[in-house]
Amino acid sequence: MYDVIIVGGGAAGFYAAIQVGEQNPNLKIAILERGKTVLAKVKVSGGGRCNVTHGEFSPKELAINYPRGERELLGPFHQHAPLDVMSFFEERGVPLKIEEDGRVFPKSNSSQTIIDCFEGEANKLGVKILRNTSVVRLEKDGNLWSIETRNATYKAKKLMLATGSNPKIWELLKDMGHTIIPPVPSLFTFNIDDDRIRDIQGVSTNATVEVVPKMESIKGALHLKSLSKEIPKLKAEGPVLITHWGLSGPAILRLSAWGASILNTYNYTFQIKINWTPDYTGSSMEGYLREIKKIEAKKTISRTQALNLPRKLWIKLVRATGIDDSLKWADITREQLQGLAEQLTASTFRVDGKSTFKEEFVTAGGVDLKEINFKTFESKLHPNLYFAGEIINVDAITGGFNFQNAWTGAYIAARAMASDKA
Image (cartoon, rainbow, N blue to C red; front, side):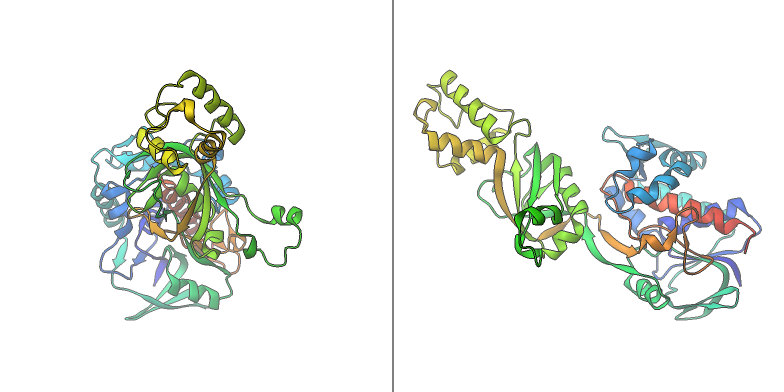
């Protein structure tokens, strides 16, 4: 018999257990983990360095990094935000650092530092950690929760599920009446096979990327005017990185996060339009190139550094227009100039599949946010049942934001679970 049982020995589970134990030392707490090891995702996150959070201290600015959960997390972020998380670790002997891009890491550059902290604190507080304990059934037994595993059945006054993207737990919750938003991948890169980006991997530049909507995917649309209102606009600006398999970088990852559901309906086969020069439109670029034609008339087009673009990419786009390497600006035709302007401001690429972004596998989907009380992270359907982390339909872009969702939810749920109120 336990006061609090937490299912899931990951980031949210440990953070919650420690917070409960510190707020109410009299409670008997257990973590049930289905695997042999705990904190496995913490171990590999951030390339093994553990990107614990992001150095964005404004709750409003922090919340906009969540394609799903922005509105719901605003209040919770006023209660427990990155600065609170950083204080938590530093007060327990884990110094942190904020890198130039805002990501926060332990100064040790090792995720093991975070794992050791969690395990040490849980041990000090007497938290029971039960590994190889897979939950197969959840039900209410009077005022208690009955948690049936493959080996035993446990009872608890309060139950928290911090199981991440676990289909089996989602199925149990569906049986209990909760709505589960079907999970789809978020945070992925685009697979593209195209001469314009072939053999120039490693090239990066700031660009605007837009997903071209598939008209046929919107059923029953008869008029273009009404159609345009129904299709979500998926557009992002930021660094775009050319890779061996296609395109990555912050702009691409933002599109994959905000477009997770619709790109899934496209079966990850669609077109994107890229403006490699976001300061220009097609017409303004055409005018600019005409000026270059006057000024650099005697120079070859491919060798001219006409724009602040990586040289390798410029040459590829020039060739894609059908312009020979030896052609001079003086000899460029009107059609070629217009074609080059289009390649620079509206290159269209076919995306054929996706790849996971590094070791970060994030899903959109989970418990419907309408069924959660965000003042306590408690189920609106079942009293004394709490959630934290990716089990709910919240996800974020890369940079420590997904962990921050886990810490915030775990802290607020822990505060409610530590209360003596039944």
